[in-house]
Length: 92
Image (cartoon, one colour):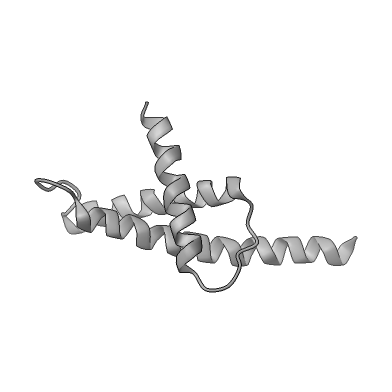
């Protein structure tokens, strides 16, 4: 069940990250989900590192760090995806 939650959270965070970032991102939906999962993992790692990964009640700080991680990963991933796709189009 944890894999299902990871996919759902990654999907939601990826979509929110795409909405926050300016402009239109060229990455497909499946890659948005993967980047959202990676951003969530990154946010959890930072939350653990600063000691706010497990608090009483709702972990707002951890969730905010997950969203920040997703925005960063989606932003960088979109740039990489665009450069890779652009290079393939030039060769063909």
